[in-house]
Amino acid sequence: MSATVPGPDGRPRCAWCAAAPEFFAYHDREWGFPVTDDIRLFEKLCLESFQSGLSWRTILAKRENFRAAFAGFDFRKVAQFDEADVARLLADAGIVRHRGKIEATINNARRACEIAETEGSLAAYLWRFEPADDGAAPQSRSTSPASEALSKELRKRGWKFVGPTTVFAFMQAMGLINDHAEGCVLRPEAKRARERASIPS
Image (cartoon, rainbow, N blue to C red; front, side, top):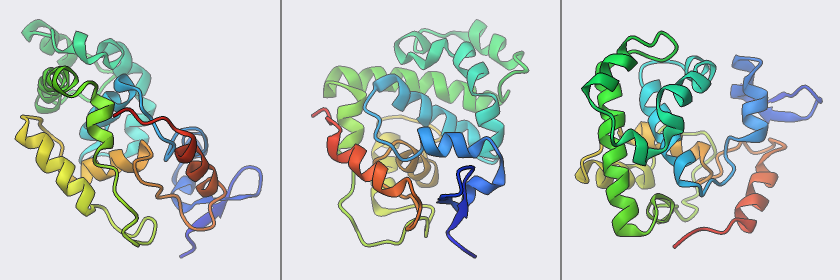
């Protein structure tokens, strides 16, 4: 199977875009480009956790609902959520109503606050796990040594629903690795974006 498919403009995109029409815009504007904003990084970790066992199409369709339900994924605000908020979220048909994942998001917000306090920012901490090129072909795996290391460290810090596969999907999406397919028109653009990005330390 080809690693790419023609996009709306006829140029090649990663083959997974063909799974849903809305994937092309997500792929072209977001996926694989470096993100250094704490709120967006936290949001993506949470959404990847909610995706576990589901499709990204389901989560993407509900993303704005998730943002509204979880205070824009401002982890300092989510960290203050209580049992009344859990009940509110379990009654919200616009999101994935999974108690374990909802409670994990609140827990993870508290853990994110701790990281921001001790490490300077969530971004500074997460980007320390950006791997050197290990020679693996793009989109040839669902975990990596870097995602396994970050998953292990997050879990050691008390995070929930952050297994190596979830973390690898997060790293792909947030540009910690450039996993655009060889031949995808966005691969060199993502590379240039990473070269220009100012990574906090």
